[in-house]
Length: 414
Image (tube, rainbow, N blue to C red):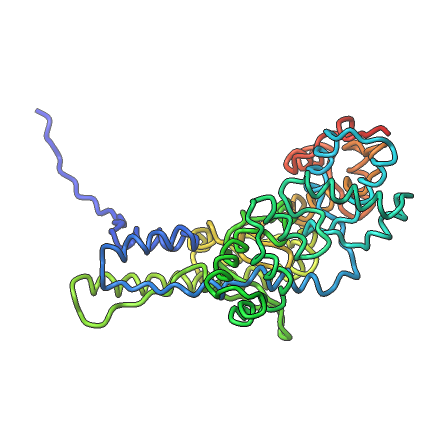
C-alpha cells in the first residue's frame, strides 16, 4: 500500500499591495495623466488639495524660442525627416524649373526649428531669383506647409501662421505678438494696458498660444516628443545644465488643515508625489549630464547609455529608472525630447550610439544632390570615411526607421 508523504516547502512572494501598485503607477505617469489622476482623487477626498499655477507662469518653451531668436548667425542643417516631409509636399506642387530652384534653396535654409535661418535676400541670390519671386514662393510654402508655422522668419511670424491656420487670429493676438518681449516676462498687466484689452482677454490669448508650437520643425527630430507641456525644463547656466520640474504642468499637492476623513490617504499621496518628483529629477539630471553634448549639438552627439548604468550611478533599481522615464519629456533649446529616447546603445563596442548614427545618416541624405541621390552602399562608404563604419544592411534599416525612401524614390528631375 502506497504511503502519502507530506513535505513542507518555504517560498517567498512579494505581494503587490494597493499602496505599492498606486506608487508604481504614479512613478511611471507623465504630468498630464498624473494631473487627471490627482483631480479624480481630489474630487473624492476633500483632504487632498490641488493648487494650479496661473496660466501666465507657463513659459518654458517660449524662453527657449526667444533664446534661439537672439542668435541667428550660425544656421544648422535641418533634420532629414523634416526635409523628406517637405520634399513629399513639394512633389505634389506643379513647379517649373525656376520655382523648383527657389523651393530647394528655401528648404536648404531651414533650421531644425522649422524657421528660416538666413536672410531672404541671400536665399534669393543662391536660387538665382529676384527677391519678389522668392518672397512669393515663401508665402506659398507657408500657406501649404503642414504643420503650420514652418518657413517662418521669426517667432512672431511662426505663431501668427498657426493662429491664422486655427482661425484664432484677432486684434488682441496681434497686439500680443507685437510685444513678445513682454509675453516672455509674463507681464500681463503691461500687455493689457498697451494693447487696450482686459487682462482676462490677454490670458485667453495666452492660453491659445500655449497650444501652438514655437518650433514646428523640432517634432521631426529623432528625439522629439509630442507637443504638450513638458514634465521637465533643461536650462543652461554658468555651472552647466540644470534640470527643474515644470511646475505649471503638475498642480501643487497638499493636505487640507485638520484631520478629517481621508487625511491619511491624502498625506500618503503627497509623499508619493514628492517621491516621484525627487526620483524623476535625480534620474533626469544624471541622464542629461551624461548627454550634455546632445543638448548643445543635437542627436548626432548622443552618447551610448543604458538604464543599468544610470541606475548604478544613482543607487536605484533599473526598473525604477525605466518606470520614472516611461512617459517623461524635457524641454530643451532644441525642442521637447522624450527622456527614454536619450538611452541608446552602440552597434559596435566603443562606437557611436545608434541614434547618433541615424542622425548622421539623415544629414548625409539631407546634403545629397537630389538629382543624384546616394545609394545605401554609397551612404555606408561615406559614413566609413567619416570614421563611423556601418554595414549596408544597417544603413537600410536606419533609413527605414527614419521613414526615408531608397535612392531611386528620392531622385528628383528638373
